[in-house]
Length: 214
Length: 196
Image (cartoon, rainbow over all chains, first blue to last red; front, side, top):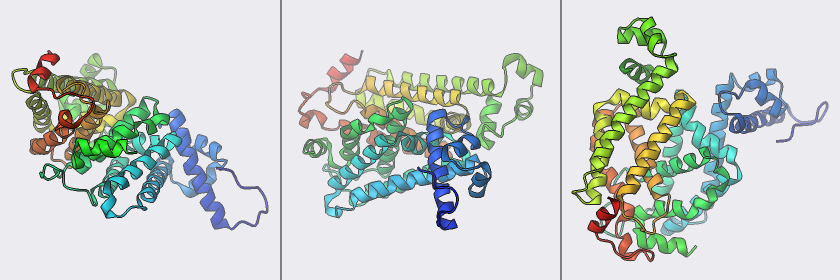
């Protein structure tokens, strides 16, 4: 994110503050991805964002506080992206909606590995203060999947834990791949993730038909 | 090592001090340092012990080739859930605290996940045409449900999850042989044979 011009620029103080906060969040996300949580310091974040240390502390109390802000911002970006992709479909097109949602999720994460890493790796590993946020952010994606999901073809109800296990399983697979350094190729997992997601609801045959229909 | 499992489950790894460990364990500080370099070494040794024990149980349960593969999957899952139910503090240490404690600790967690994925791959039918990543996602899903159960403080009731989780793990394999273009229908007995 570009820094603003120095001196008299006619920009409102609110605009400058918001821009600084966004720059700090973007900087933390990048630095964290490059050097890991332990080595991410307030000075590194400030340097990357071109924001002074004293300005850093106007926005955040600590590195952790900035991390929480960046984590929330990452989850919100992912949510906006998935919801925008789902928005074109009504309830009767559940499988298409899921397909577009998953495709947009993987495209965003592959394009922005630092974003993927803070959301799916650091979120679970940064410590006690973040667990709750990580858990509730994963849970917040469950209704997108559950809403309008069909009953499986064999007539048995989908077990209650299935939606959560599907979302948790996807997060775990993606997190493992990011850790292994494959973050930029997550979009190649689209057929796999889709098949895993659709099968419990549609059965294997129908899930395959939808995936191969593209 | 039991002391650090309890303490990290109660207050978290970060807040656990050497002084807490020695007083809980009833040993002298010197005894601890005779055996370990410091807090992280105690923690890692405790994680290693628990994971080894839990994995041995799961492996033993999965190894019963007298039953069909679905029963093997269920037996492996049941062994894991029983372990968690019997050792709630140890389970919390390995499945929750380890993730955020230190990089070496979270690497232990990753390694145990890999092992579980390996167990599942050995048991289930081969050449199903299912995605290569299917076992990874299934184990990840199970781990996530267990993780939540432990965090809710309900590790003791982990076995209640058995019916839902075994349905979840087996669901992708239902009927794959009947409709999948890449795999001829495979009887359970050939599957068992090919595993051995």
